[in-house]
Length: 131
Figure 1 (cartoon, one colour):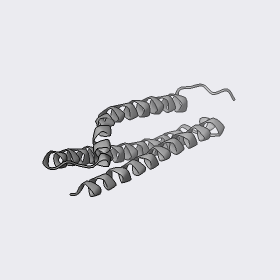
Figure 2 (cartoon, one colour; figure 1 turned 120 degrees about the horizontal axis):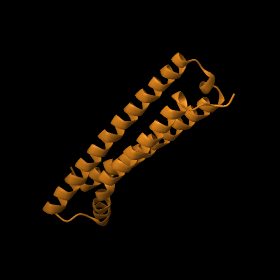
Figure 3 (cartoon, one colour; figure 1 turned 90 degrees about the vertical axis):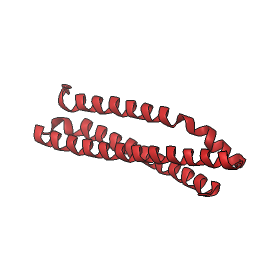
């Protein structure tokens, strides 16, 4: 793989990751709105069904993010290997030096996801809404 191909894939992954974050915010925002306006009054079976749907969607997004992160780490390694064989350009070096935060971002994203998920679990099943 050439430096240009690796760089192109890394930049495409950045766009895909941004789309995933957008879907995450949309999903959680829509759930909060639904919870506030009508879901808190819904029967338990409906709340369970909707929360299961949310859980499956979150799991899907998490698996997608994990695979994208693994792919990005592999691309960074390929770029590093290429750099060991021959010098790479300034763009490749910039991508190579920016890749160290990938693991940290993975854990920060996971922590944020867990906190939001637990908050929605509490609001869905345990919080006593005023009628």
